[in-house]
Structures are given as C-alpha cells and as structure tokens.
Image (cartoon, rainbow, N blue to C red; front, side, top):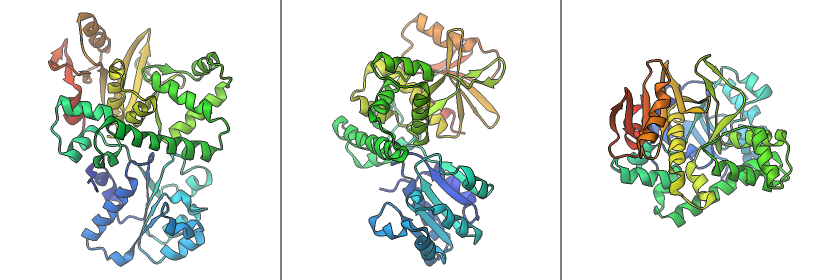
Amino acid sequence: MLFFRKKYLDKIQPFVWKDMIKILIWQRRVWKSKLLFLIKNFLLNSWIDENKIVFVDMENLENEKFKDYKVFYDYVKNFDYIFVDEVQNIENWEKAILSLQNKWKDIYITWSNSKILSGELATNLRWRYIEFEIFPFDYKEFLDALNFKNNKENFLKYTKFWGLPYLINLKLEEEIVYEYLKSIYSTIVLKDVVDRYKLRNYSILNRLISYIAKNIWNIFSASNITKYLKSQKINVSTITVLQYLSYLKEVFLLQEVKRYDLKWKKVFEMKEKYYFTDIWIRNAILGWFSPMDIGWILENIVAVNLLSNWWKIYVWEYNNLEIDIIAEKNWEKMYIQVAYLISDENVKKREFGNLQKIKDNWPKYVLSMDDIADGTYEGIKWVKVWEFLKYQWSK
C-alpha cells in the first residue's frame, strides 16, 4: 500500500528537475523507497517520458551486478532522471554519482545512515546536494493513513503501536506488531551498527540501549551511564559509551536533544536527553507497554512529532527545574510540558509553575491526556495531547 506522504513531497518537489542531488535519509522501514516511487509518479504525471527514468533498487538481488560503480554508471548514464535506493550498497558509489551530477542529471538516492556525506565527499558535493530526513509517521499521517478520527481512543493506538508505515498492512495486535518491530530493531542494531562499525561486544551495546529505554525521562551524561554499567559488572570506558551513542544516533535509533540556557541563550554541550526516533521499537524491545511509563512515552512522541515537522528542540534544566521541550522554527518559539494526567493541585502547580518562571511572551503549553484539558491556567494553554499534535503546531 503506497501512502501519499504529502509533507515530504511538498518539501522535495521544489528541487525536482534541478541538478542538485536529492538525498533521502533516515532509519530503515520509514518508506524512503516508497517516496522515491511517489516522486517518480510525480514526474510521470508531469509528462516526463518514462524512458528517461531509471530506478535501481540496491537491495534487490537482481541488481547485485551494480555493486561495481562502473557497471552501475554505464547502465544509468543515458537516463535523465536517476533513482537509487540504498546507494551505499554500490562500492565507491560517490564516484558514479559525482560523474552523473556533472552531466546535469536529476538524481535521487536513499541511505540509512546520517554519515553519508563526510570528508572529501562532502567537500566535493558542497552546494550540490540537499538532504531530506524521512521520519516515521507523525500522528496526523497516522490518522490520514488509516482514515481514523482524531480522538483519545485512536491516539492511544498510536502511542502503543505506531510509527513505521508498514503497519498499515498488519493487524494492530501487540503480539503481531511487536514481533515486526523487534525484527526491525535487530536489523538496525546488528547490520547497521554491529556489522558496519565492526563492534566486538554486542552485549555492551544491548545493555546501553536497554538502559536508555528504561530511563527515557532522564538527562544523561556519558560518565553516569558508565558508572551504571560498571555497577552491573560491565567494565566500559566513557569514550566507548560516547562512541556507541554516536553510532545509535547515526542510524537514527536515538535522537539527541541538548540542554538550553534560557538566560544566556546558549546550548550546553554536556549532558543530553535521548529520545527514541521510534518509541514503539523501544516498547517492543522492552517487551511491555507500562502505564507507569505513559508520561515519558507521551513526551517522546511529542518531541519526535515536532522534529519530524522541522522544529528544533531543546530541554531546559536549571536548579532542579525542567522544561520538557523548547521548540523553535522560522523565528518562532514555544515551551511545552508533557504530563499523563494533571491528577491534583500539586501536579498542576509543578507543571504550570515551571512554565510561569519563563518571562517572555512565546506560547506556553501543558499537554496531557485529561479529557478536561481545554483552556488556560494562569495564561498557559492546557491542551489534550492529540489535539495539539493534530492542529496546534503544524505550520
């Protein structure tokens, strides 16, 4: 089933027919390849001759011969529109792509790692490429794909299962969905991390991921993670922890969020928060979806929905006070606290009180699952999470 991911097509279409290399990046199974087909269909619907278009899927065994970049180049060089899925499977692919780009070809490629462009290649391609980050389904895409109404019941389905587009084709039952998600997780960790970076100790990586999954509400430091692992009889250096974290970010399993200093308007380089790009993979690898975690899961979902709609986000921590999310885009800003339920007056004072300490005039939100969340408290907007994700910020 080919779902029309409009927000990405709207981003990519201004660069169609331009000689810039279009690079679609993100973790596996977010339908980067499906987006290539959608762009191809857009070209065909714009009266481009199909004989001028070539599509090479490098995960198809029939195309193994194209692992030799010279064979690949000779095959595609006479086409004007070139689509390559998982281009990293072509050895020395950059030589072929650079040569094709010099011939003013319209090129689209996908890749599952953020380090596609580094060193000499990045220098050679400067001003000649543009990257598009393709996330799992945001909440609005989830509703549109399944033709669901925006309500609490459907939002709970989203929090438990959703993100990866292929789930359109599966029955939304925990055993079925989590088995699929665990298989994706294994591929990301074993193939994209362990094999790619030639890691010798898979158990350390696995324990690191498990620790972050169980503590997603924490602001971390590598030294604190190291101390925890040592308490579990795992002897690992802080440098190794930092290296493993960088690998997990490069394959988009984790999203790093920096701390922000509101007073001095600067970003701290030490101690970060990590969100799972696909919180549902996190739920699957732990093997449970606990009501005790719902507040942190909601925060993770809000954060990644914002990131997938091109907001930059930060966290503020100062004197034991924390603002969950500071979001910025196009010279706009908003402050967000996320809670499961505002269960009593003390919780209300805590969640709204932190935001009251911010003295500028940008919008401030408390998001929760309360059915009565609709209005303001002390000038701060109180909004149902599902209403916020569907309407409030998708500008």
